Image (cartoon, rainbow, N blue to C red; front, side, top):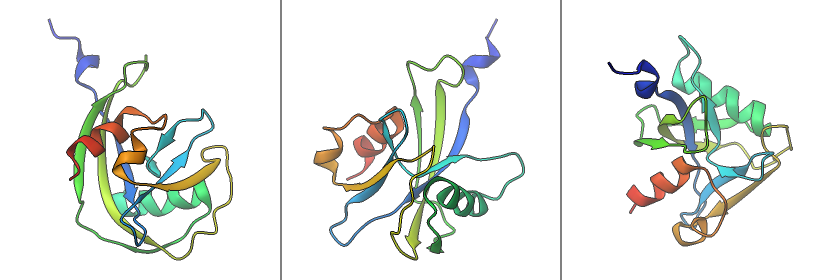
Length: 135
C-alpha cells in the first residue's frame, strides 16, 4: 500500500530577480538559510498575485513586472523536513520597482549570487536543485 504522504508536493511560487551581472537575488530567512523570494501558493490563488503578495510581505518590495509564463519548474526533497519534505517550485521572472528592502520575520537580508557563489552558502534544497539545472 502506498503512503499518500509520500506523494504530496507543497507548491511554492518563486521570483527570479537578476541584476545586470546575471546574478540571482536570494533572501536570508530567519533560520540563516538562503532561498529564492516567494512562498507557498495558497488554495485558489493566482501565481502572479501570490508573488506580488509574498514579495511585499517578506521584503516590502513592489513589483514592476512579472512575466506571466513560468521560466522553470523544479522539485526537491528537503531531507530534514518532517511535515513537507517534497517541494515543487514554479519560477517567474520578476522586475522590481526598487531594492529598498525592509527586514521582516521571513527575510532578514537580501543579496545577489552567481552560480559559483551560491554553492558556498547555506541554502535550502530547492536553491541547490535550481542551480544544478540552470546553465
